[in-house]
Amino acid sequence: MSRVIWFLTGNNGKLNEATEFFAPLGYEVRQLQVNPDVIIEPQSDNLNDVAISKIEQAMSHLPNSDNSEDMILVEDAGLFIDSLEGFPGVYSSYIHKTIGCKGILRLLDHLKTEDSVRLASLRSAEFRAVAVLCKQGEIFIGTGTCPGYISEKIVEGNGFGYDPIFVPFDLDFDNNSLSPGEYGEISTHGVPFGGVEMSIKKKFSHRTRALNDLVNQLPSA
Ligand code: IMP
Image (cartoon, rainbow, N blue to C red):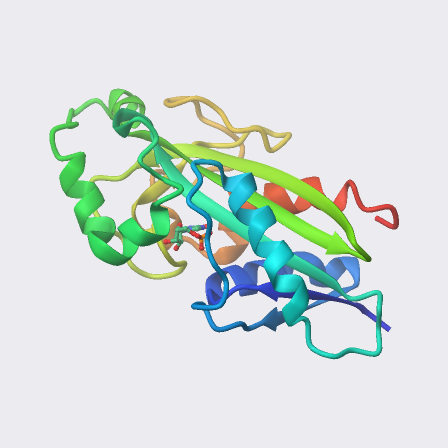
């Protein structure tokens, strides 16, 4: 029997990524849907605090289940843009709903150059994710980052959120992110996450890294 993880999220993109991640490890991910008005997101400039508060609130919404081994997962992410002092950061969701990717591109409009390496430095940014899992009352916290830069144009296709404008830096042979202008074994060749397959995004993703960090802490992993 596979072990069940209830993922508190209304975001299908996140759900798909977590499902793909956990399936080979023998975990079944099910969506824990709670009316968003019921879960209060604390005003905090720290992703960890937000995720821990949400998991504490989610515990009382777990469906009746015969299996006390069921786990709960919460994941919070944000886009931190260096030239904007980390904005939108913990406000990423609100900013995406209001000004969206177009608005972010407008904010960075003055950061332009023909030199692609310089461009990647000027427009550098980072996705950060915190994944919190509750297993029989015990809390595990995994973190992950994905450095890259904000593209000049929106690329629609796959993905969600800021994927259409985020280009990850290349990865070396050991999956470590490189610096702007360094060419690695794994690359999207300047294409934002929105223009690549999920299987490619997975290699770079802050979410994959946070979930890996989490799984490495689980006693049975
Ligand atoms: P939250 O973790 O759902 O609060 O995410 C905050 C904001 O960042 C939302 O607008 C998400 O769509 C966006 N976001 C989170 N993870 C990703 C990602 O992997 N790619 C693109 N956007 C993301």
